[in-house]
Image (cartoon, rainbow, N blue to C red; front, side):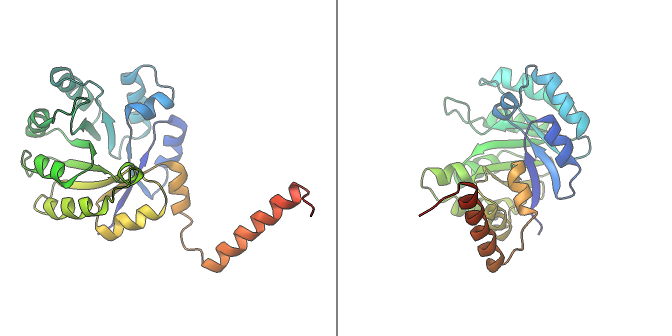
Length: 232
């Protein structure tokens, strides 16, 4: 199985650039990326993204924290494009599981990207609620788990095994820290990995030998020492 690469970005110029790349099969965003990209109006900015990318999946996240407002936002976001996946956090900021809204939206045939997942127990809770028809992405945050000293790989293995009963469910490796994560995701059998632009460009250069890497590294050190006019 091939692991699809999605680009994790909200900057319009970068979306234009990466939408042209065959290696990029979709896009993910979040409120933090939107803010960093300078978005002021969430709806109009999202529609600009969808105008650029109208034939690949685009995940757009709700930012409400309570059920009623979250559902209202999700229903609106879903109308913005046929390629939209509505991004819903597995729990809100108070730690309340968003199972009710996940089940309701899924039963309304709304494509979901369920985000901020860290454990296979969370995956299991989601799978108990959803149908086997409507598309669901389960985004597990590998990098952020690793940042706290926790190994995300066992959680992926369990989640992937559980999801095999659902042809409509895809497991996504989120919060990439290095290009090697792509190979890890492939080895595990993740359906998708979402990667920032700079890391995608590094993945495009895969294949260099260790000898080539040694020469490049030593040349870089040599060039910098010359530029600095170092003497001993």
